[in-house]
Image (cartoon, rainbow, N blue to C red; front, side, top):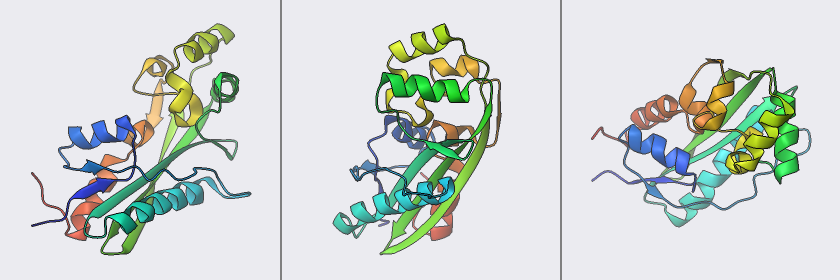
Length: 191
């Protein structure tokens, strides 16, 4: 019998992406701080946090395959994590308005104590937002638990005319990358 995949995240978006791809999993959030280190590059941050999440859960579930992931939004080499409050969400949206930015998701699979880490980067272009657009969007509360203060699969989709790369990565989990890593690990068979 193959080991169960455990998602080290409570993110409903990551869960939905795995379900849609018919990848069976259980959920056990890692509950670790998600702060970048001083001077840490965005890709390094996303990969480090994914690894820390996966390893934290793998200690409790050593017989399972554990998947950790962390998504960051980057503009002008500044990491935009989840907003602290409504004012922070508005600040982030003003930074992204009318510009292109990167979404980077670090992914880590821990299998039998061994960690494999990778990441995916997608270029996203956001239309110019008015102050009213930003205020109305922040009032919906949708931006509050999202890196970069927006959900491409939600209301904010109206302001995303172009992406270059993996759409599921922008939602929060690069499914094709995860599937390839699982397949290469031989710890997974298709349902």
